[in-house]
Image 1: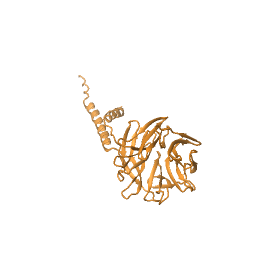
Image 2: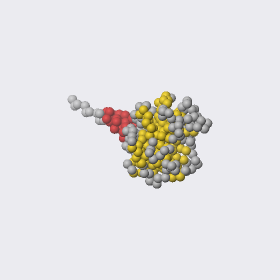
Image 3: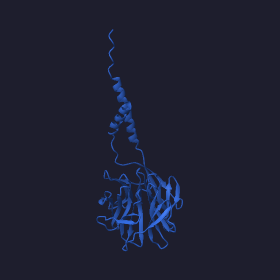
Image 4: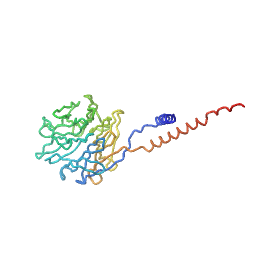
Length: 325
């Protein structure tokens, strides 16, 4: 009975704690020793395994990897490829991405249990990329047509499904969650872009407030969308969009303010991406939700208040009458 009283009391008091608009994060830099000047982290699953690559593609070729923190890198390159980027990873550790062959053609790929499969959209002979994958193996990606425009799709083995983005000019599908919700972006000019969220064919436009260039790059199963946007001064910032509350939070790595991209998010709210540091190197980043000190202080205060209230009630109970002799 006492346990029930205390639990209810805490719940009532904690309910009065104000909600915080922004989530606090702790940041960790990740640099692959294969190229200390260029690392990008692009996807993360619920187990914390990360997909990414190192190498700028010019001085050092793109080399894919998966990463178990803090620094256990496992190389992952499509067999015989010239360059590989590992972009998406699901809860089973299956990965997707793209590679460049000896002829300079981009192909998507899947890697399931170290078995690679090349994926090329039949509408193109130049570029196919897979950029996100769900637990069921559904992938999101795009192909490039002869005019250089992007065409978004989802893919299951043997089947490409085109995505009809409203106001389509040139668009990519970049992420898909277990419910089949797809995110991406539509480039309406070289300097303007809007993100999108596609839920069973119902589209929501995603534009960070005040920005004319927004890219949605990943989505988790809680409906949180991540990406990047460019501000009025030309700075690049990451963001998290909460679909339930329809609110945006700007995200910057402290070492890369104005140069940050957030590319992936898992169901724990953990973020991955990259930024450009003071030495003009591209560093991977991991952002983990940090406990709010004020929140826990208020919870402790609520707990103590419950105990005090119970003691006060106990002390204020009338004493039983003494028997009359």
